[in-house]
Image (cartoon, rainbow, N blue to C red):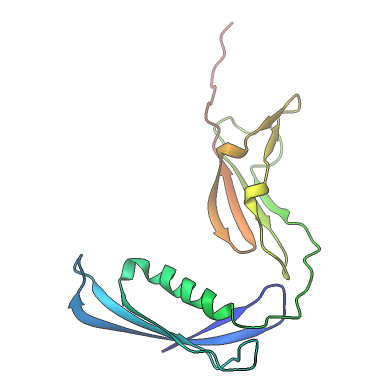
Length: 169
């Protein structure tokens, strides 16, 4: 059995969950072990009643994370997480590279965007990335890829699609 703690990032409540994983030797369709997962908590629901544990049967290893996340989301929806703190700060650029002048045309651009807690998280679906070459603005939003993504931190990379190395008169 493992313990997992869930904290609402807009509040100060942390709830402990217990997770038990048991597998069966019987093989699934693709030769994988089948798992039974049980997730529960002693925390009370919104009405003050106990929350029933979730049991999920016949889980295969390749979707284990998704099954646990879905079960935890359902259990967490039964908990009163208030009082919540208002998220008043916008996300900010924590780091970018390369920086300075004389950046080679072969360089990829990396940006780290963070949001301090308490936070509602970073919504990159509304993000717009503008490149300025000191003469003109270019919207490169569709060309930026997410390299790493966490709740309150994103690492983005832009690799220029066309790299011109020589010019001819």
